[in-house]
Length: 366
Image (tube, rainbow, N blue to C red; front, side, top):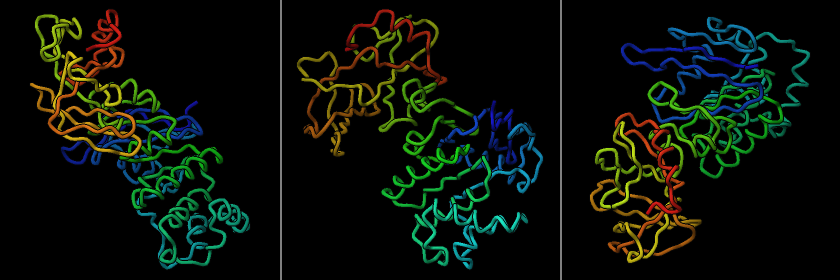
Protein backbone atom coordinates (compact mmCIF):
# COMPACT_ATOMS: atom_id res chain seq x y z
CA UNK A 1 0.00 0.00 0.00
CA UNK A 2 1.32 3.44 -0.92
CA UNK A 3 2.35 5.68 1.96
CA UNK A 4 2.16 8.77 -0.26
CA UNK A 5 0.10 9.01 -3.44
CA UNK A 6 -0.32 11.92 -5.85
CA UNK A 7 -3.17 11.94 -8.36
CA UNK A 8 -3.09 14.27 -11.39
CA UNK A 9 -1.52 17.24 -9.59
CA UNK A 10 -1.59 20.37 -11.77
CA UNK A 11 -0.24 23.80 -10.85
CA UNK A 12 0.15 26.91 -13.01
CA UNK A 13 1.64 30.34 -12.49
CA UNK A 14 -0.34 32.46 -14.92
CA UNK A 15 0.31 30.99 -18.37
CA UNK A 16 3.26 28.92 -17.13
CA UNK A 17 2.39 25.34 -16.15
CA UNK A 18 4.66 24.42 -13.24
CA UNK A 19 3.21 20.94 -12.64
CA UNK A 20 1.52 19.10 -15.49
CA UNK A 21 -0.68 16.16 -14.40
CA UNK A 22 1.76 14.67 -11.87
CA UNK A 23 0.85 11.23 -10.52
CA UNK A 24 3.03 8.79 -8.57
CA UNK A 25 3.10 6.54 -5.51
CA UNK A 26 5.79 6.22 -2.84
CA UNK A 27 5.89 3.12 -0.65
CA UNK A 28 6.46 3.35 3.08
CA UNK A 29 10.18 3.51 3.87
CA UNK A 30 11.16 4.36 0.26
CA UNK A 31 13.74 6.95 -0.72
CA UNK A 32 12.43 8.77 -3.79
CA UNK A 33 14.52 11.38 -5.59
CA UNK A 34 12.85 14.18 -7.54
CA UNK A 35 15.47 14.93 -10.17
CA UNK A 36 15.62 17.46 -12.96
CA UNK A 37 17.11 20.75 -14.19
CA UNK A 38 16.37 24.15 -12.65
CA UNK A 39 12.83 25.30 -13.33
CA UNK A 40 11.39 21.84 -14.03
CA UNK A 41 8.98 21.93 -11.06
CA UNK A 42 10.85 19.92 -8.39
CA UNK A 43 10.59 22.42 -5.54
CA UNK A 44 7.06 23.45 -6.49
CA UNK A 45 6.02 19.79 -6.29
CA UNK A 46 7.67 19.38 -2.89
CA UNK A 47 6.07 22.57 -1.56
CA UNK A 48 2.69 21.43 -2.86
CA UNK A 49 3.01 18.13 -0.97
CA UNK A 50 4.00 20.11 2.15
CA UNK A 51 1.00 22.42 1.79
CA UNK A 52 3.10 25.54 1.20
CA UNK A 53 1.59 25.77 -2.31
CA UNK A 54 -1.91 24.79 -3.39
CA UNK A 55 -2.52 22.62 -6.43
CA UNK A 56 -5.01 23.88 -9.01
CA UNK A 57 -6.22 20.33 -9.61
CA UNK A 58 -5.54 16.85 -8.27
CA UNK A 59 -5.36 15.08 -4.92
CA UNK A 60 -2.66 14.11 -2.40
CA UNK A 61 -3.12 11.11 -0.12
CA UNK A 62 -0.74 10.42 2.76
CA UNK A 63 -0.98 7.59 5.27
CA UNK A 64 -4.47 6.61 4.02
CA UNK A 65 -5.86 10.15 4.38
CA UNK A 66 -6.64 12.92 1.88
CA UNK A 67 -4.40 15.86 2.82
CA UNK A 68 -4.99 17.92 -0.34
CA UNK A 69 -6.62 20.82 1.49
CA UNK A 70 -5.03 20.49 4.93
CA UNK A 71 -2.77 23.30 6.20
CA UNK A 72 0.94 22.43 6.55
CA UNK A 73 0.73 22.11 10.35
CA UNK A 74 -1.81 19.28 10.10
CA UNK A 75 -0.09 17.18 7.42
CA UNK A 76 2.24 15.43 9.90
CA UNK A 77 5.31 15.56 7.71
CA UNK A 78 8.73 17.15 8.06
CA UNK A 79 10.63 19.34 5.61
CA UNK A 80 14.30 20.29 5.36
CA UNK A 81 14.95 23.41 3.30
CA UNK A 82 17.91 24.26 1.10
CA UNK A 83 18.81 27.19 3.37
CA UNK A 84 18.44 25.03 6.55
CA UNK A 85 16.05 27.72 7.93
CA UNK A 86 17.70 27.76 11.38
CA UNK A 87 16.88 30.57 13.82
CA UNK A 88 20.16 32.52 14.20
CA UNK A 89 19.34 33.78 17.74
CA UNK A 90 18.49 30.31 19.08
CA UNK A 91 21.08 27.72 20.07
CA UNK A 92 21.07 24.15 18.74
CA UNK A 93 18.91 22.91 21.63
CA UNK A 94 16.22 25.52 21.03
CA UNK A 95 16.33 25.06 17.26
CA UNK A 96 15.73 21.34 17.68
CA UNK A 97 12.86 21.86 20.12
CA UNK A 98 11.22 24.80 18.35
CA UNK A 99 8.77 22.76 16.28
CA UNK A 100 7.67 20.66 19.25
CA UNK A 101 6.94 23.81 21.29
CA UNK A 102 5.17 25.53 18.40
CA UNK A 103 2.85 22.55 17.95
CA UNK A 104 2.15 22.39 21.70
CA UNK A 105 3.36 18.81 22.09
CA UNK A 106 3.79 17.10 25.45
CA UNK A 107 6.65 18.86 27.30
CA UNK A 108 7.47 15.80 29.39
CA UNK A 109 8.78 14.05 26.25
CA UNK A 110 11.10 16.87 25.18
CA UNK A 111 14.17 15.84 27.19
CA UNK A 112 14.16 12.21 26.02
CA UNK A 113 13.51 13.13 22.38
CA UNK A 114 16.22 15.79 22.45
CA UNK A 115 18.69 13.35 23.98
CA UNK A 116 17.94 10.65 21.38
CA UNK A 117 18.11 12.96 18.38
CA UNK A 118 21.15 14.93 19.49
CA UNK A 119 23.11 11.69 19.95
CA UNK A 120 21.81 10.26 16.68
CA UNK A 121 22.89 13.39 14.79
CA UNK A 122 26.14 13.76 16.81
CA UNK A 123 25.01 17.14 18.14
CA UNK A 124 24.98 16.30 21.85
CA UNK A 125 28.16 18.33 22.50
CA UNK A 126 26.98 21.31 20.44
CA UNK A 127 23.60 22.02 22.03
CA UNK A 128 24.62 25.40 23.47
CA UNK A 129 26.11 26.76 20.24
CA UNK A 130 24.43 29.24 17.92
CA UNK A 131 24.12 28.42 14.19
CA UNK A 132 26.85 30.97 13.41
CA UNK A 133 29.25 28.87 15.50
CA UNK A 134 28.61 25.71 13.47
CA UNK A 135 30.13 24.39 10.25
CA UNK A 136 27.95 23.84 7.19
CA UNK A 137 27.75 20.12 7.89
CA UNK A 138 26.77 20.71 11.53
CA UNK A 139 24.05 23.17 10.49
CA UNK A 140 22.74 20.54 8.09
CA UNK A 141 22.58 18.04 10.94
CA UNK A 142 20.57 20.48 13.04
CA UNK A 143 18.09 21.00 10.20
CA UNK A 144 17.82 17.25 9.72
CA UNK A 145 17.57 16.66 13.47
CA UNK A 146 14.68 19.11 13.68
CA UNK A 147 12.86 16.99 11.08
CA UNK A 148 13.65 13.73 12.87
CA UNK A 149 12.61 14.90 16.35
CA UNK A 150 9.05 15.46 15.09
CA UNK A 151 8.62 11.67 14.75
CA UNK A 152 6.91 12.04 11.37
CA UNK A 153 7.16 9.18 8.91
CA UNK A 154 7.44 11.39 5.80
CA UNK A 155 10.39 13.73 5.28
CA UNK A 156 10.72 16.17 2.38
CA UNK A 157 14.18 17.51 1.53
CA UNK A 158 14.74 20.40 -0.89
CA UNK A 159 18.33 20.27 -2.23
CA UNK A 160 19.73 20.07 1.33
CA UNK A 161 23.36 19.59 0.30
CA UNK A 162 23.72 22.29 -2.36
CA UNK A 163 25.47 24.70 0.05
CA UNK A 164 28.18 22.20 1.02
CA UNK A 165 31.52 21.50 -0.64
CA UNK A 166 31.98 18.37 -2.75
CA UNK A 167 33.72 16.28 -0.08
CA UNK A 168 31.16 17.11 2.61
CA UNK A 169 28.30 16.45 0.19
CA UNK A 170 29.62 12.94 -0.36
CA UNK A 171 29.80 12.12 3.34
CA UNK A 172 26.40 13.73 4.05
CA UNK A 173 24.82 11.64 1.27
CA UNK A 174 25.90 8.51 3.11
CA UNK A 175 24.73 9.87 6.47
CA UNK A 176 21.28 10.87 5.20
CA UNK A 177 20.76 7.54 3.44
CA UNK A 178 21.88 5.58 6.53
CA UNK A 179 19.60 7.67 8.77
CA UNK A 180 16.64 7.20 6.42
CA UNK A 181 17.11 3.42 6.46
CA UNK A 182 17.62 3.27 10.23
CA UNK A 183 14.46 5.26 11.00
CA UNK A 184 12.39 3.75 8.18
CA UNK A 185 11.48 7.21 6.88
CA UNK A 186 9.68 7.74 3.61
CA UNK A 187 11.81 10.41 2.01
CA UNK A 188 11.26 12.67 -1.01
CA UNK A 189 14.54 14.30 -1.93
CA UNK A 190 14.75 17.14 -4.46
CA UNK A 191 18.03 17.48 -6.36
CA UNK A 192 19.42 18.60 -9.70
CA UNK A 193 22.51 16.42 -9.10
CA UNK A 194 22.20 13.05 -10.81
CA UNK A 195 25.02 11.64 -8.64
CA UNK A 196 22.97 12.28 -5.51
CA UNK A 197 19.88 10.72 -7.05
CA UNK A 198 21.68 7.68 -8.45
CA UNK A 199 23.65 6.94 -5.28
CA UNK A 200 20.90 7.50 -2.70
CA UNK A 201 17.48 6.74 -4.15
CA UNK A 202 15.42 3.58 -4.41
CA UNK A 203 13.57 5.22 -7.29
CA UNK A 204 13.98 8.42 -9.30
CA UNK A 205 11.25 10.66 -10.69
CA UNK A 206 12.85 12.59 -13.54
CA UNK A 207 11.00 15.86 -14.18
CA UNK A 208 11.14 17.88 -17.38
CA UNK A 209 9.28 21.16 -17.82
CA UNK A 210 6.63 20.28 -15.24
CA UNK A 211 5.87 16.71 -16.31
CA UNK A 212 7.30 13.31 -15.36
CA UNK A 213 9.72 12.26 -18.07
CA UNK A 214 10.47 8.89 -16.48
CA UNK A 215 9.97 7.15 -13.13
CA UNK A 216 12.01 4.09 -12.24
CA UNK A 217 15.01 2.69 -10.42
CA UNK A 218 18.43 4.29 -11.00
CA UNK A 219 19.43 1.21 -13.01
CA UNK A 220 16.31 1.48 -15.17
CA UNK A 221 16.80 5.17 -15.94
CA UNK A 222 20.43 4.60 -16.88
CA UNK A 223 20.07 1.42 -18.94
CA UNK A 224 16.54 1.94 -20.30
CA UNK A 225 16.06 5.69 -20.86
CA UNK A 226 12.58 6.53 -22.13
CA UNK A 227 13.69 9.55 -24.16
CA UNK A 228 16.66 11.55 -25.38
CA UNK A 229 16.13 13.89 -22.41
CA UNK A 230 16.41 11.01 -19.93
CA UNK A 231 19.36 9.49 -21.79
CA UNK A 232 21.32 12.74 -21.69
CA UNK A 233 20.35 13.82 -18.16
CA UNK A 234 21.30 10.49 -16.55
CA UNK A 235 24.94 9.53 -17.05
CA UNK A 236 28.17 11.49 -17.18
CA UNK A 237 29.11 12.42 -19.78
CA UNK A 238 25.66 12.58 -21.44
CA UNK A 239 24.73 9.94 -24.00
CA UNK A 240 25.90 10.69 -27.54
CA UNK A 241 22.97 11.22 -29.93
CA UNK A 242 23.79 10.79 -33.64
CA UNK A 243 21.29 11.46 -36.47
CA UNK A 244 20.73 8.57 -38.86
CA UNK A 245 20.27 9.11 -42.60
CA UNK A 246 17.07 7.58 -43.94
CA UNK A 247 16.84 5.91 -47.33
CA UNK A 248 13.40 4.33 -47.65
CA UNK A 249 13.07 1.94 -44.73
CA UNK A 250 16.84 1.79 -44.07
CA UNK A 251 18.63 4.04 -41.59
CA UNK A 252 22.36 4.60 -42.02
CA UNK A 253 25.08 6.19 -39.92
CA UNK A 254 27.04 8.52 -42.20
CA UNK A 255 28.78 6.69 -45.07
CA UNK A 256 28.55 3.16 -43.66
CA UNK A 257 27.15 0.73 -46.21
CA UNK A 258 25.33 -1.51 -43.71
CA UNK A 259 22.14 0.04 -42.27
CA UNK A 260 21.79 0.37 -38.51
CA UNK A 261 18.16 -0.76 -38.76
CA UNK A 262 15.25 -1.25 -41.12
CA UNK A 263 12.26 0.78 -39.92
CA UNK A 264 9.62 2.48 -42.05
CA UNK A 265 7.64 4.68 -39.67
CA UNK A 266 9.85 7.66 -38.76
CA UNK A 267 13.36 9.17 -38.91
CA UNK A 268 15.60 7.96 -36.09
CA UNK A 269 18.62 8.95 -34.02
CA UNK A 270 21.24 6.60 -32.62
CA UNK A 271 22.20 6.78 -28.93
CA UNK A 272 25.59 5.61 -27.63
CA UNK A 273 26.99 5.80 -24.10
CA UNK A 274 30.53 7.17 -23.97
CA UNK A 275 31.80 4.11 -22.10
CA UNK A 276 30.38 1.74 -24.74
CA UNK A 277 32.52 3.13 -27.59
CA UNK A 278 35.97 1.61 -28.06
CA UNK A 279 38.79 3.50 -29.80
CA UNK A 280 40.80 1.30 -32.19
CA UNK A 281 43.46 1.84 -34.83
CA UNK A 282 42.09 4.04 -37.64
CA UNK A 283 43.33 1.70 -40.38
CA UNK A 284 41.33 -1.20 -38.87
CA UNK A 285 38.05 0.70 -38.56
CA UNK A 286 35.08 1.23 -40.86
CA UNK A 287 34.34 4.48 -39.01
CA UNK A 288 36.91 7.07 -37.96
CA UNK A 289 36.78 10.40 -36.16
CA UNK A 290 39.13 13.34 -35.65
CA UNK A 291 40.35 13.97 -32.11
CA UNK A 292 39.48 17.42 -30.72
CA UNK A 293 40.72 16.99 -27.16
CA UNK A 294 41.28 14.51 -24.37
CA UNK A 295 40.72 15.06 -20.65
CA UNK A 296 42.39 12.86 -18.04
CA UNK A 297 39.94 12.41 -15.12
CA UNK A 298 41.98 10.02 -12.95
CA UNK A 299 40.02 6.78 -13.23
CA UNK A 300 39.40 7.36 -16.93
CA UNK A 301 40.05 9.61 -19.90
CA UNK A 302 37.38 11.48 -21.85
CA UNK A 303 38.13 11.66 -25.55
CA UNK A 304 36.20 14.27 -27.55
CA UNK A 305 36.19 13.87 -31.31
CA UNK A 306 34.28 14.82 -34.48
CA UNK A 307 32.68 12.55 -37.05
CA UNK A 308 32.76 13.91 -40.60
CA UNK A 309 29.29 15.19 -41.46
CA UNK A 310 28.04 15.56 -37.85
CA UNK A 311 28.42 18.92 -36.09
CA UNK A 312 27.96 17.67 -32.53
CA UNK A 313 31.15 16.25 -30.95
CA UNK A 314 31.26 12.61 -29.87
CA UNK A 315 32.56 11.76 -26.38
CA UNK A 316 34.28 8.49 -25.55
CA UNK A 317 35.22 7.30 -22.06
CA UNK A 318 38.23 4.98 -21.83
CA UNK A 319 39.71 3.52 -18.61
CA UNK A 320 42.86 4.96 -17.05
CA UNK A 321 45.22 7.41 -18.72
CA UNK A 322 45.40 7.15 -22.48
CA UNK A 323 47.10 9.74 -24.64
CA UNK A 324 45.68 11.02 -27.92
CA UNK A 325 47.08 13.70 -30.20
CA UNK A 326 44.73 16.55 -31.08
CA UNK A 327 43.85 16.42 -34.76
CA UNK A 328 44.73 12.73 -35.17
CA UNK A 329 42.38 10.10 -36.56
CA UNK A 330 40.98 7.37 -34.33
CA UNK A 331 38.87 4.36 -35.26
CA UNK A 332 35.61 3.69 -33.45
CA UNK A 333 33.91 0.43 -32.57
CA UNK A 334 30.96 -0.53 -30.35
CA UNK A 335 28.72 -3.45 -29.59
CA UNK A 336 25.43 -3.60 -31.46
CA UNK A 337 23.79 -4.61 -28.17
CA UNK A 338 24.66 -1.21 -26.67
CA UNK A 339 22.84 0.90 -29.26
CA UNK A 340 19.71 2.90 -28.48
CA UNK A 341 17.23 4.25 -31.02
CA UNK A 342 15.05 7.34 -30.59
CA UNK A 343 12.39 9.02 -32.71
CA UNK A 344 14.12 12.07 -34.24
CA UNK A 345 11.13 14.41 -33.86
CA UNK A 346 9.62 13.44 -30.48
CA UNK A 347 12.83 12.28 -28.81
CA UNK A 348 11.02 9.24 -27.40
CA UNK A 349 12.65 5.79 -27.31
CA UNK A 350 11.72 3.65 -30.32
CA UNK A 351 11.28 0.10 -29.01
CA UNK A 352 9.92 -1.41 -32.27
CA UNK A 353 12.98 -0.24 -34.19
CA UNK A 354 15.30 -1.63 -31.52
CA UNK A 355 13.56 -4.99 -31.71
CA UNK A 356 14.19 -5.00 -35.46
CA UNK A 357 17.80 -4.06 -34.84
CA UNK A 358 18.38 -6.74 -32.20
CA UNK A 359 16.83 -9.43 -34.40
CA UNK A 360 19.71 -9.12 -36.84
CA UNK A 361 22.50 -7.73 -34.67
CA UNK A 362 26.12 -8.74 -34.99
CA UNK A 363 28.72 -8.60 -32.26
CA UNK A 364 29.97 -5.21 -33.41
CA UNK A 365 27.92 -2.54 -35.08
CA UNK A 366 30.93 -1.06 -36.89
